[in-house]
Amino acid sequence: MDPIASSDPHSSDPNSSSNDGNGSSGSEPLSSDELALWHACKALGTVVTQQVGAALTAATGLSGTDYGVISRLADLGPGRLGQQALTDSMGLSKGAMSHQLTRMTHRGLVLREKSGSASTVILTDHGHTLLQQARPVHAEAVRSQLLDRLTADERATLLRIATRLAR
Image (tube, rainbow, N blue to C red; front, side, top):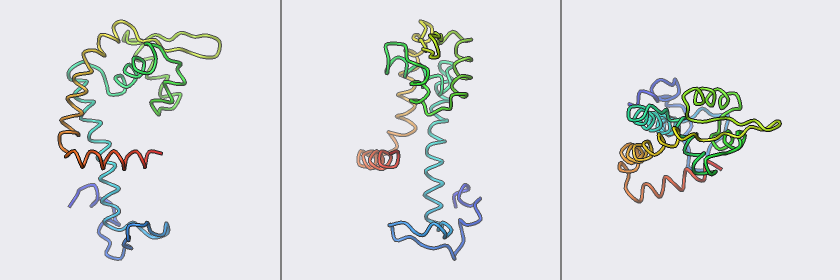
């Protein structure tokens, strides 16, 4: 049995309601199948993200969040982006992004330029160099930890499901 699912007291409850695929009442505990799916979704996001982040750190010293910031700066803007737009694109809180950028500024990866009440985040040459080193590591890690482990049909199905649920 899945250790994550087995840690939940409802995971093996024979009295849990089953689901016909159309959802069940919100007042009923999750069935063991529903819990298994829930835990698998959480583990997928966590485990794959951690493994990709570990590969990035081992090869370049960048964390997964560092990579997310510098890749967005390069991809969404010409090496510069408003701090709020960057924060929104990363799904981080303002405080978490501020702390992240402070750490990255101290390491010479980014600069922050203040203009009135807004801040612009700028990718430094050092940040750009590390991004170029990190891109192939990121691609290989995503392929080995996710893409290569799925068939083409499974990838297409996962993409459809993830896109629908992310709305």
